[in-house]
Amino acid sequence: MLDYQALKARGNPCTATEKGAWLCRHVEQVEMLEGNLFEHLPALKPKDGAAPVTISVAANADSLGTWFLTAAADYAKTSGVLLDIAVDDEGHTADWLRAGRVLAAVTSLDRPVTGCRRHALGSLRYHATAAPDFIARHFPEGVTADALARTPALTFSQKDRLQARWIEAALGREIAVPTHFLPSTQGFVDAALAGMGWCMNPEALVKDHLAAGRLKELIPGLVIDVPLDWQVNRLVASELEGLTRAVVKAAGQGLVSVAA
Image 1 (cartoon, rainbow, N blue to C red):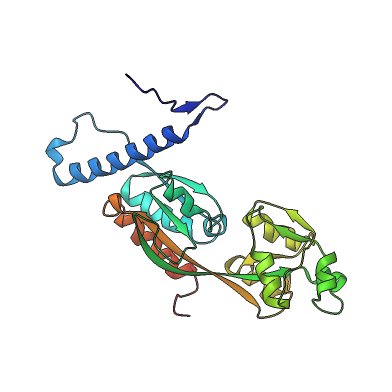
Image 2: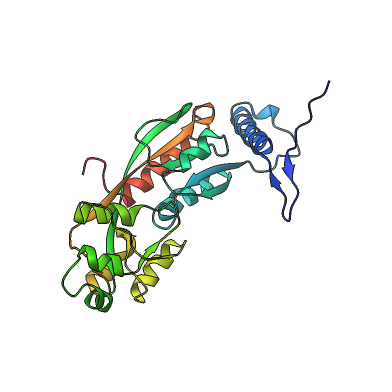
């Protein structure tokens, strides 16, 4: 008796079901392995050529907005491979790997995902920043619990806990703060410059604004470092060595050193 499985859900556009997404990732793995085979045995390569291989990877938005695209572009230019880059919080991209939805991901885990190889990359450093007039208006007596509870922050999504981590580091306890939700890395910087709220911004995107005085730190020197790693499905780790090298190189230039 045949067991039929739905591979796509109707809609505009249609989307893959869980089984359909798993099948797509399996096809990607097979295509990667075939590409490696044809490279070593070119006589087996179809004479009419083959469509470029597309591989799915995941990264957090702040990595995309700072250093990861450098790695992706370098790899794409030299490999001929197409990339399907999914975006999620760095604490949740590992779920994409576990579910087989991607072959590799930037994560914030300190251990390998089952079936994956892990490469420590370094830390993405964040500063709590706001426009000088915003700080003067909302924090005239400095950063206090009462002031924070009244002052609007910026939050990327419901998964974003960076502001909460900074508050706990600053005051030793959690405080509920009013917040705007803004799912854009560059939008955070622009909104802070416009005086919309205070937020955690990657150092690479605000260091020039801080140096020029267009933004200020709420508490100078108090930063949050988020360690990142690169995890690759072991079945295709060898085929993705070029991407891994590009990711490690770009991370070395764009992240705070692991040993720092």
